[in-house]
Image 1 (cartoon, rainbow over the protein chains, first blue to last red):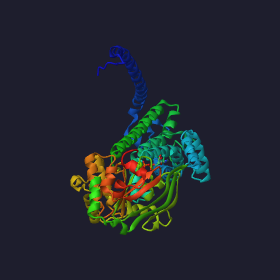
Image 2 (cartoon, each protein chain N blue to C red; image 1 turned 135 degrees about the horizontal axis):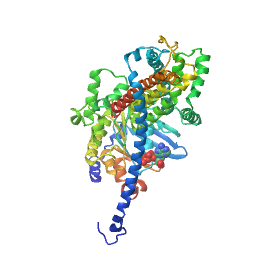
Image 3 (tube, chains in turn orange, red; image 1 turned 90 degrees about the vertical axis):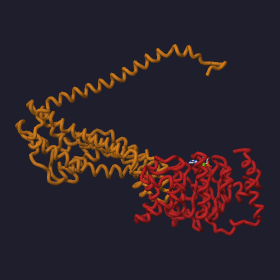
Length: 296
Length: 271
Ligand SMILES: Nc1ncnc2c1ncn2[C@@H]1O[C@H](COP(=O)(O)OP(=O)(O)O)[C@@H](O)[C@H]1O
Ligand SMILES: [Mg+2]
């Protein structure tokens, strides 16, 4: 270690260590504060919602339809309605989104046209949800005469989250090492076989994690539902995708805009239900990621 | 090594078995460009059945490009243009009628870096059987075992066939990849520096393997290790800057090269 021509004087360097450690501690505190602030805001928000809403979470709350009297109002139509809507959103957005991502990543030639499409997809992800509502209103509600049905809302929501799913799936597909594709092609596999047996299984965890986050957004999104005219006061359950329905965020929105305070507490209870659903979905996303990450 | 080769020549001066063997690959006037970069220049080579053909040359001279052209893996690189013809058993590999999937089924490939799938050892070898629609369980098991035996890795993995292939060492992974490419009993095996990522012991194992596989398969192997080429090959092609400088029996290339550049290269004067 000790050589004759030392250009760095260890003793000098050692003296500077305390200053560096002070800086280290300052940054550590800054990052800790950032975490504390975000957590605090979240905790206050949650505490308020839970304290207001929890007493209203009764069996009746889940069993009752909308009502003018707060003590009889329930969330049944909204929960079932959201499930119906997601039954349209999940298959439509997954098939369109993953299909587009596979095409763009594995099949499309890299030319101006594909980069144009690529740019548009990324831009669409930033378009306000109201605009998708207007699109849904024009196309699905009016042009296709779907009215304010499960189908119209489901298709609108699918369009809304499509860019997010496409981009997430593209990232996941791009992250699959090229050696694996080469190995498959080298054995005489066709493109489709390579995609199905090698690329998709490796990308599945990423695709699903991204998609589930997108689905969470579709569940919580309100503006497009307002624009396409989804009612909040519904006293029946849909029996087909062409029926009218209501969804959780619509119901919550409706309750918060009422003058009576009890309805605000009902809204809080509705938010708890929504949050629990979101937490469940995110847990599924995490579980899928852990389950499929290493091996398929 | 050189001595041994010379000895063999003296022992059996008229032995030239290669001449009569049927041609597997016939490359004539082949050029290849990556965009503007002229990577292969007028390649003319004839490779014969059940021989080991080594491709040697300094880094960047086009060895990988050429071997990837032989099974058209080069198609996966954008902006590549080729001219000239390459015939595999008399069929033009660039023609529309000859599907790449068929070509790659007949011509297996082993890559420089071991690239097993993130699946079990068994499923790695069974992969090519499955993509070709072979469903018979008994047949799949037979082929998997046979391939693993041929690749001299059976004894090491027979008790852990259903464990993930990523748990194997680099040398084992490479032999697994060889087994995988043998599962469909190809005609030709292309190997692009298959030992460059391996330790000396694994390298030796793969070399022995090549020697055994030669009985059944025609092997084209890229290597920048000249001792390796001398040890395992029957013919050697020396590539330099995208051209074939010299192509002859390994014995001749290493003992009596006719081009001074070949001599310089094999004696380590450049590259
Ligand atoms: N995908 C590619 N795009 C552009 N040029 C490439 C590509 N692959 C290789 N080349 C170029 O072609 C030449 C030959 O490369 P390669 O066949 O990989 O050489 P070797 O395997 O003999 O080391 C090199 O000059 C290299 O830079
Ligand atoms: Mg190379």
